[in-house]
Image (cartoon, rainbow over all chains, first blue to last red; front, side, top):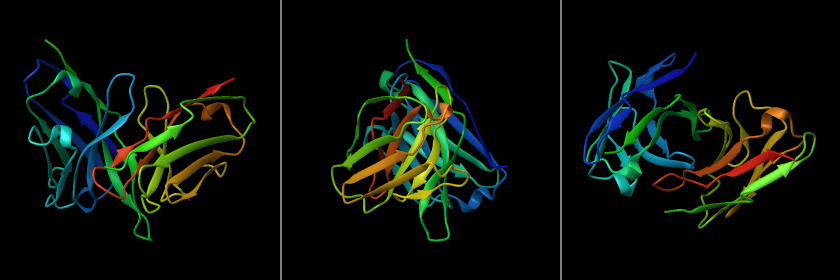
Length: 122
Length: 107
């Protein structure tokens, strides 16, 4: 059974840092691109960042560029999101999501973790 | 950035009725459009990818269609468990973007 389990959320002051982790199991982690998506309280989904299967290519939404860093350790089946210079608008539930692919080469976010809450407040 | 606009914001229907949800893109995502369902307190669940392909395990009452910049998610006959928030997502360009969501509520 495919599972994604996030951790690392918590309360942090504006300007502070936090590192999120997402452990994958039930699949060959190193073969899949991975993503982070967030959801502010009562709001919609917002794409944050993505990373290719070998970690060689990364993507960020403009609002987090130069503040967040996505990385992965395939030996530990773990995806990370290092968040710095946190702002109140970064407060959200952060989900990790796998990039599945079908036989025709189409990509899609087929599995999601349960999310970890990041609260940014003084 | 491709902006996705979903309508209506809220849709009130009864079980057994047909639901039609719309997603309009600011530029064509070349068919690379997906739909997700999210229930309160849960992670999103993939329903449809690449406009019309149902994800594994998704009931046949869910279908996707569209082309160009206009896309539709149809639920042919609503079941009680279908009342939730639905999001469209495009993957044609970076960043990946989502629509603002349509809340499907029981009338």
